[in-house]
Image (tube, rainbow, N blue to C red; front, side, top):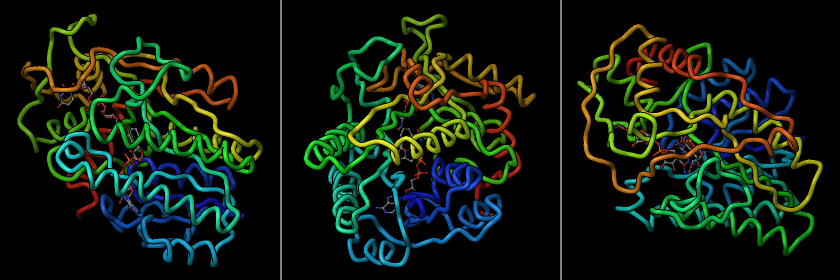
Amino acid sequence: MAILITGGCGYIGSHTVIEMVKAGYDVVILDNFYNSKPEALRRTRELAGRDVPFYECDIRDAEGLRRIFREQSIDAVIHFAGLKAVGESVQKPLAYYDNNVGGTVVLCQVMAEFGCKRMVFSSSATVYGMNNPSPLKEDMPTGAVTNPYGRTKYIIEEILKDVCVSDKDWSVVLLRYFNPIGAHESGRIGEDPNGIPNNLMPYITQVAIGKLPRLSVYGDDYDTHDGTGVRDYIHVVDLAAGHVKAVDYALGHSGAEVFNLGTGNGYSVLDLVHAFEKASGVAIPYAIAPRRAGDIATCYSDPSKAERVLGWKAARGVDEMCRDSWRWQSGNPRGYDQ
Ligand code: NAD
Ligand code: WQD
């Protein structure tokens, strides 16, 4: 009995591999290294303390997937593999629909061929769109998304719900992540974006190591306590632990169930900058810049359903998130490139 982890060499996937092994699961990793590196796999195996089986494979390659299902006894899939850059998705929508939506359809078809009908899927708070007030709850309307990336997550959620309606043997857990930051406490694995980071925390850490001159704060005139955007930052190891609980749940239920994975706390851009400065002892120069298109003022979760049903709750606070992001970045100034 093993759990296949697609995208298991990526940021969230690598941390989840470690938490799953710690919880006693056998895991198999699949990745095409589109947005990750073999060095991440090497270090993940090192931290897991075992030679976890790995397949270099694309989720759109049905024959490649069949080989994995033939060679391994897979009971469930944690499905991280996908493209995730919001801005790029506006430029290349077809690549996002092909990889994220098309890839998920091929993966589900091959799973069904082999009678494996349990999946935990990486969805996103982005599916709540522009119109819902925070705290965001799982039963609020979804779909008013602002970009093709978000639309792929919304469409995949709907596809997976339809699959569960069509065949009662399917069990799907849709996890809506809020804003994952932080890194494994060893400082050996973490987020390693290509080029200039799009997301706030990797931008802050690259300013802190001197790779970038200053942070642009996108807007200080939002209706928030200090005018800057408020988000629900969650430590990636807490997020990874949520996947262990979600797999436990998927193995014992059928149908589709949705859970927010967040802390329920909102921090502004400047709150995060100051928390990072305190944790690292490094000053972060910043300048106020215009709002970024598509951003909303405030987005944080109501995480109570995950606590009630899965028995999961985020344990790490923002100081730990900043400390661990900094340990990773300062110990690996060039990420996985040595
Ligand atoms: P990541 O890019 O670090 O990891 C994704 C991994 O999937 C990479 O290793 C990449 O090489 C692999 N991959 C991509 N397309 C593939 C394909 N066709 N076949 C095989 N492998 C493929 O991203 P992450 O931050 O770890 O995110 C994981 C998942 O969580 C994604 O689906 C993402 O959309 C979702 N998510 C991420 C965030 C976030 O802020 N990081 C928030 C919400 C949801
Ligand atoms: C956080 C806050 C920015 C960068 C995105 C995706 C979402 C999800 C997580 C995958 C906002 C501000 C940022 C910078 C800034 N991903 N900011 N200067 O936008 O909440 O969510 O990542 O599903 O779908 O949209 O995260 O980290 O980009 O921004 O001021 O250089 O930081 O305006 O208020 P976001 P983020």
